[in-house]
Image 1 (tube, rainbow, N blue to C red):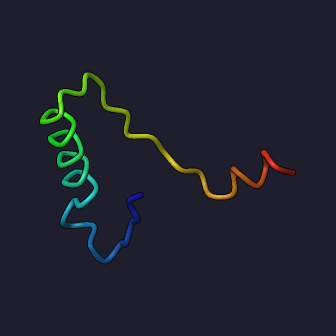
Image 2: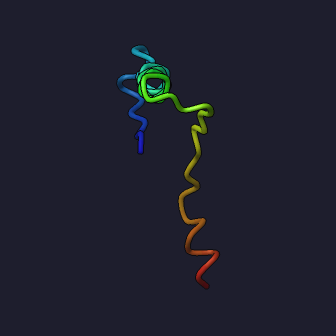
Image 3: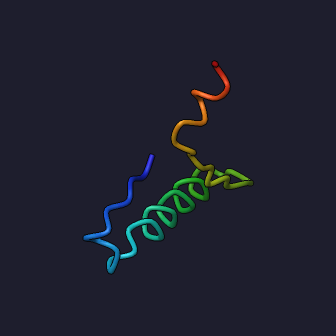
Length: 48
């Protein structure tokens, strides 16, 4: 899971880690890449 820190926004770390994930998948012959997403508190809605 990636986290966002506004102090490092100039470094585009989200893009960089995404490219690393894509490279990882390509090296292993994966056909698809799903970046996914997390919505804080969403699990709480499902279980309540």
